[in-house]
Every structure is written in C-alpha cells, then in structure tokens.
Amino acid sequence: MKGQFIVFEGIEGGGKTSQIEQTREWLQKGGLGKPLDVIQTREPGGTELGQKLRSLLLNDHSLHIDDRSELLLYAADRAQHVNQFLKPQLKEGKIILCDRFIDSTTAYQGYGRGLDLDLIRQLNAIASDGLESDLTLWLDVEVETGLQRVQERGKRDRVEESDLAFHQRVREGYTALAEQFPQRIIPINANESPQQVQAAIQKTLLAHLS
Picture 1: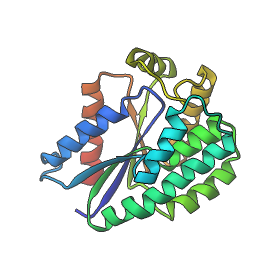
Picture 2: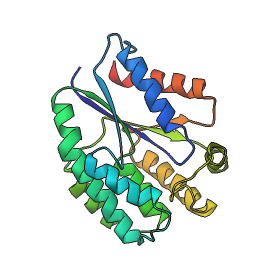
Picture 3: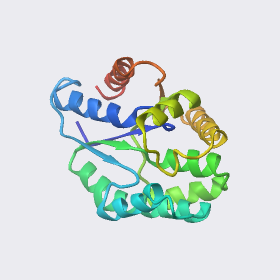
C-alpha cells in the first residue's frame, strides 16, 4: 500500500487521542489484512518547533494571544510539520495517523473565532503546500458531552477553557465542512462507547483503504 495520510478531527472530548492509539495498534497488527508501517503525529506539536508552538498556544494560560496571531502560529506549525515530517514520511510509504490538520483551523479559527474563511483557506493552502488527507475521520460528539468529558479529565488547556458558544460554533464548522467534502470527511458518532467508536473507525478504514 502506498503512503496514506489519515486525519482525526473533532471538538474537545471526542476521544481522538485514545482512538488514534487504538487504530495505530490495529493497523500494525494487520487490521487491513497485513501488518502496516504506521506512525502517529499531531498538530500542533509534530516537530521540535511544533512542540514549542504547542506549549505557547495551549499550555501558557498567562499569555494573551490575539486571534490573528493564533491563526498564524498554527500555520507556522503546519508548514514545518508538512515539509519536515509529513511529506518525507508519505514518500517512504508510511501510513500516517494525524491528530488534527487543516479542518481544525477552519473550524476553530474560522467558525469559532470568527476570522475570515477566505483568508484561512489561503493560509491553509500555503501552510499545507498542497497536501490533503486521503481520509479524515470526524469524531462528532455533542458539545455538552465532550466538555463534560474534558472536565472529568481534569486540567484544561487554553482552547478547552473557551465558553460553550465557542465550542458550538466549532462543531457547526465541522458540520459544514463534512457537508462540503463528503468524499474526504467521514463522520463517526463519538457519543457512543470507546469500543463502538473504534469499531466504526475500523469499518470505515476497511471500506476506504482495503
């Protein structure tokens, strides 16, 4: 199988991190018929520079970041990630599971923060250098359910601390994107149990990648 770029998207509390780990293990053990060379990454934070940007963007609660500055920092993370990590790994035939990509920017900075969508599309095109996912799994969860899970988990990052209306706008953004790109973005009902969510992910991957 040639390299595949599979992205996991969704609002807070959808279970992306644990589902990506389970999916990686399933693929490595031959879930698609034979063991595959699978690597896991994330945005922000998929490179050394990205890790520093992630700390600024999500973990420094004392820092006020202007919405436009936030957008540009995410773009910088992506440009580094694409050219230093994603494209070289795909060229080697790796299967990449990525926690967030361009749709997060559209949903969070566009719909959530209210920044211009055309500007975001242009910036995404520059930062991604033409790279698109082969498949995006949208782990869709009710906003209240997702935020309750985040609260039960404990410490929250800067984005998770945003108000309910912000997260509702973000989910509306994902809904709009899924309607716009139905061939690329596949919704997964993340309100269900982790086992049911993983089963739905495996079924989707079997249908699209076998």
